[in-house]
Length: 362
Image (tube, rainbow, N blue to C red):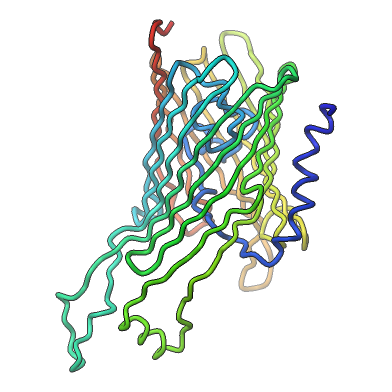
């Protein structure tokens, strides 16, 4: 198979599989679209081509082959929507041999301490505040990744097997399973990446365990009582290109542009049709001597209609910095989870550590 065919294969695969998911919901498992790591978030999630550390298990598993150290670990915590929700991420990656890398990633996105007032009313109609309980609505993802060098020079590929757990208190829960696949190709100073998320569709099986009091409330308010069901997350293809330039006096410039392509109907993105929607986003990283980094990005390009019917184009910026302290990397990003205008920005910190068994870090 030629290199041209290899790079075009993901596009053709998604066009062939997309029609089977035309009736699936557009927004399923969206917590996995928020992003992880201060570097990528500071570049508006433009990372599929340049990612080359433990976070590649999330962005593009092919990038795991660039992991430094015998073991690399990372962790991130952030709060969104003025602390209403929390996002936690941790991952580890290790070289198995000269050609393969294994990684494990964990993601949790949750809204905790939600008041449960379904039993607030006593039979006589009075309020009993002692009966108010609390619960969490939490989404979990467990990613098992493997990356390997291809026989073609410069080409790497990787896959994710992921398990999804979604839970709304004791009322509802779902288990999901899916696959991701990615490739990276380096040609001279250029890096190309393609990441297929949910390439076969990710299936979430929902089950409900509603108390009678809640069922009665649904019936009295003319709401449909939820039933056990199957939810499908449709495939998404992300294409990226990046190039790193080394300047004089130890400075470097590393820009990247990504195209997020969905096939489930029209979305509010820059390029859209009834079949294909394309969401472009770009970022740039300025580095000094591989020690200090400054990042910026633009993404989430949408159109918003005002009360007068006129449409305006909105663009969401992101910013970030990074500092390397020997084998410890500290990254910061100023970003949010994709909202426009009303949602406040969040301060996001992530740490990454390279662990060496038998040699010192230079």
